[in-house]
Image (cartoon, rainbow, N blue to C red; front, side, top):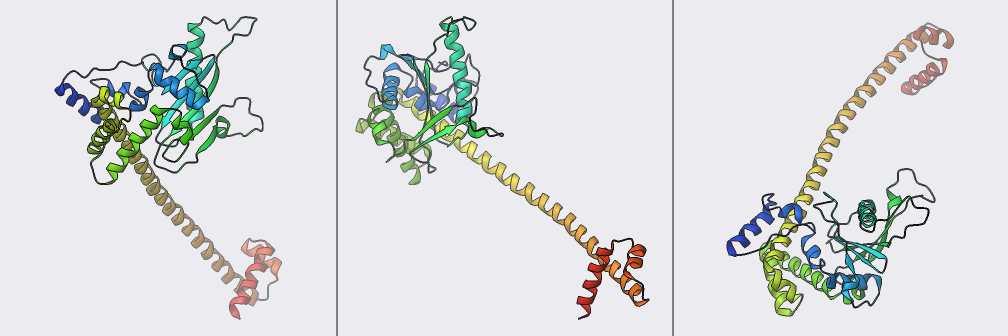
Length: 337
């Protein structure tokens, strides 16, 4: 896992709080933390086993049987997943998401490729052997707890991203997304007290923020309340300052991304409007030119009809087809009625 910076005194805590909020590169915190609180909460074997049992519906009791294989961002630059576990030749990759991401299968494909690359190297598997080299069976899960409405459970498929659709894609990867917000997948959360406690903490923070508190005030109040109520008490007491800093940083980062999306949408609207005006003007000019040419032709045809000329002769003189001349004569007759 990435290097963690210790909190030694109040000044250091305040500095780290500021660095989390500002995304400072000086401490390395910005780069080392992803979905920080959930990542940290499930970084230990005991908590990872609880999560594994909940998702896989198993009842293993010995954390030492489990291997935490979450990617190390120091080695796999920009390729850091949230939680990866190998237990009895099953590999479970779990991601925590506050925003629905339909690209999770593609992201997961990259993660699992790195995971297998690491596994092959560590176990010295020979991919050129005449015998099949056994690898862990993969399972992919996303735990969604964002504020936008999502179904209780859905399957995201890599093949949905393919431009050229095929009935039986040769490469498929499926990610199961569970909505773990309050009133969703309660049994799954009941089987994992750490997950249940984390979602309660997130919900408290949202609730207090909606009442008008600053996000920092809401976070601090939620942490204190969780400790008082025994929700992840040991975790929050031990990591209080870091949890507050990480939560605020996550919120700031999410808000920044939301504002960026809104700005891109606004720019897209403006560009579309400008292009629409440009196209409209060009189309208007084209329509005007066509109308002007049509009126000019009709004037010529009127004069030639008045002189008793036949349609083939008129068509030849105005350099139009006979069909077009007949069409314009009908318009002339309609206008005269």
